[in-house]
Length: 123
Image (cartoon, rainbow, N blue to C red; front, side, top):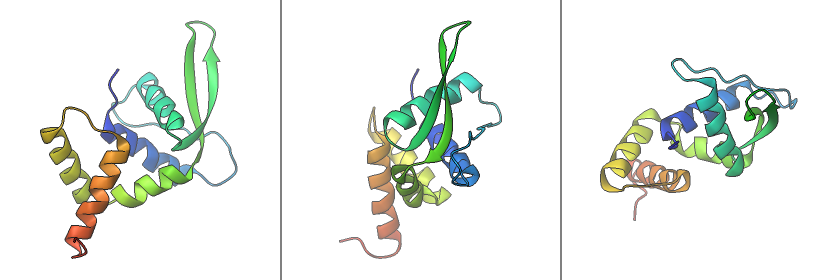
């Protein structure tokens, strides 16, 4: 399965909104998105250090469910750089037009550069 960068960002926005600092499980429900696809993306976000998840094994079909419990600093940093929808869409469109593959770190760097350009801080 390929990672969907919009879905990664949407998941992080939900986790940030619902994280109250208690470490309780956070339910991520997004219209039109299957729970298994969300869990797969949470696995990747956990591996990248963006969120902290509990891993629950489904003994029936051996699927590992990733259930978020907290946003990590890297997740907050990513959202700080990509929160503006117009910047996010612009960067995502440009990146996917010009490159066959990008990472969340690359998208964040591009978003920060675009924000700097828009406020006149580009050099």
